[in-house]
Image (cartoon, rainbow, N blue to C red; front, side, top):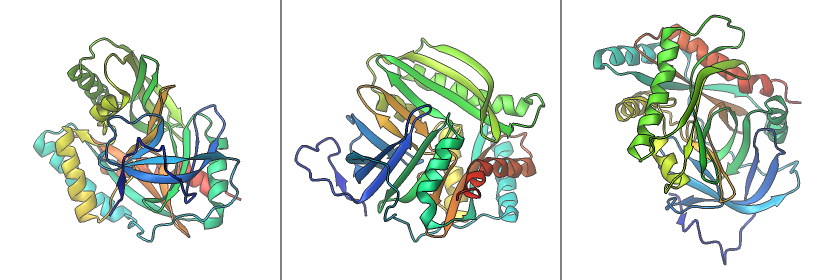
Amino acid sequence: MYRTVDCNDHSKKVIPLSDFLAYRFPDHSALHFLGEFEVCDNVSELSDSFIIADFLNENHFVFNGSEVPEVNDFNWHFSTDLPPEIQKDAYIKHASGILQAIRLLGMKKVVFSRVKHAEFSADKVIHFFNDLCNKYPKAFVYLASSPLFGTWIGASPEILLEVHGNHVFTMSLAATKSTENAEEWNQKELLEQQYVTDFILESLSENGIDSYDKNGPYTFEAGPVKHLRTDISFDLGSLTPIEITTALHPTPAVSGLPRALAIEMIEAVEKHDLKYDRSLYTGFLGKISTDGTKLYVNLRCCQLFSDTACLYLGGGFTKDSIVEDEWEETERKSKTLLSVIQDVK
């Protein structure tokens, strides 16, 4: 069971140096910290904190600690609960069932994900982080290790929310294909991206935000794959960053539409049938601060174990999806991290 605390009261707390956090925002230098992650039971008034949230926005881990010089070694917190690898035959079987349900129920989209295992050496964790920073300068790169959730690393291309003063920025990012694919985006891919954009705009309207600037969709490259992206900006008004985040997350880019039904299907197939939990994958993480908030969707990530990297990979299914193509999409997405894992010296 998690220990919960008042995550806004650090006035008299002595912070043990048991956990590790490093992150690098795009085009910035990497920062390294030692301290402690805590489970926060009240995020509504959270400020000036680094936060990690899970897929369903149920568990929130807040970091309290101090910046340190670059760390070359650490006693990493590796979980012993290795998620099962989902092989192609099992993926095809369950994905076909999801596709059938989408068509029968008239759903717009469901995001189905899987786990892929790769060999990894525990003494290469810092090298992995540094190499991700070097290879993907436009991504948000992070490394976090705690007994609360194990050791996770990732290089995400997707901003969930960015706030500077009263100005707010978010993006709709969906549809995927190889950067080498020169074909035009097809109707399935255009619709998949439009669903996410429409959801974001409807969610903002429900929270009193009807005035916004929109740019897109346009092609956005993220390592070995490219996506359709639409940029949306608006004024914060009387809302807080956390209130907007709660309204948006999880977007249909990582869940589906209708959202509640899609999440129910994801839980039934992934958690019940395939016996794996997304945990931090497709959650969000980043810095909430009065000086500027930057939160990213936790994509292109993996959980590290003593001898294995477990990559989390997802794809958006619509009624026009081809199951074999969706499998190949997850394989392409895996190259973001696999290409670095295989080259880590």
